[in-house]
Length: 118
Image (cartoon, rainbow, N blue to C red; front, side, top):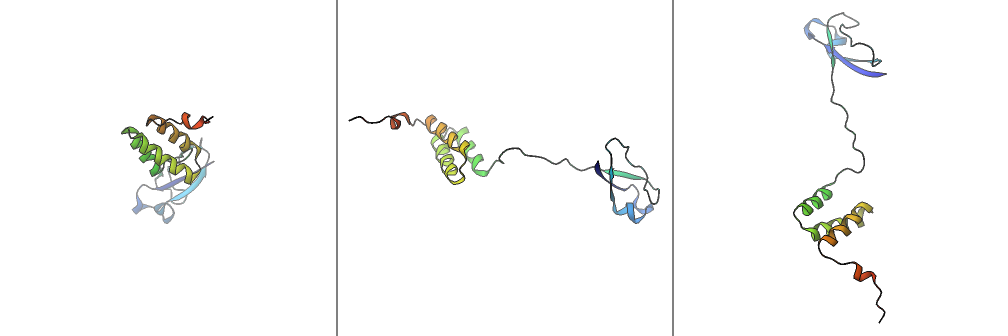
């Protein structure tokens, strides 16, 4: 069952019910009403924009700035910003992105992982 909104086609020749508009629950397979149930004057269904559902994390201003730095080839800037945001928000995707951008900037993390046997 869906809720549909209706309003008078000609407000001057209608009752208060349809002039102000009203909602009615109908099955999706039912035809749209064409006459007001009270005054029998013509009515039309009001169409609304569909709701937009965003899946996943919404894009933040920081995400946009990181992407901008990446487009410009400013890998170290992008990496630093992603790293700081990852620390604040605990987002693992940003941590991975920061490491990738650091590598693109020329940082070599492998040398830090090796133990010095001296």
